[in-house]
Image (cartoon, rainbow, N blue to C red; front, side, top):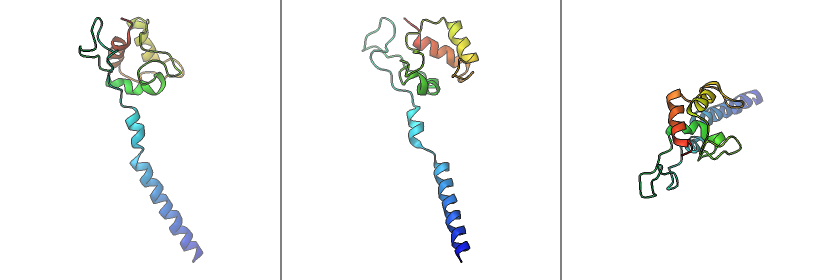
Length: 119
C-alpha cells in the first residue's frame, strides 16, 4: 500500500513539474522585448518631434548582456560605438568571449551597427 501511494505521489509530482516546464516563464520572454526608442534616440540632427529611431528587434538577443538600451550592462557599450562597420560585423561573426559567434545574422548585425554607431 505504501509503495502504491509513493508511486502516485511521484507520478503526480512529475506531471506537475512537466506542466510548469512546458508552460515556460512568460516573464523571461517579456524581458527580451526590446525597449521602445526614446526621444533621445532620434535620427542625426533630428528633434524629439521627429520620428525616433526604433531599436531593431534582433537586439533582443543582445540585451541581456549589453543592457536594454545598449549602454553596457556589465559588457561593452554598443551605443555610440566607434568600431567600424567591418570591425563590428567581424566581432558578431566570430564572437568575442564570453559572447558566442553568429548570435544574429550579418544583415541583423549591420542593422544593429547602423543603429548604435556614433553619429
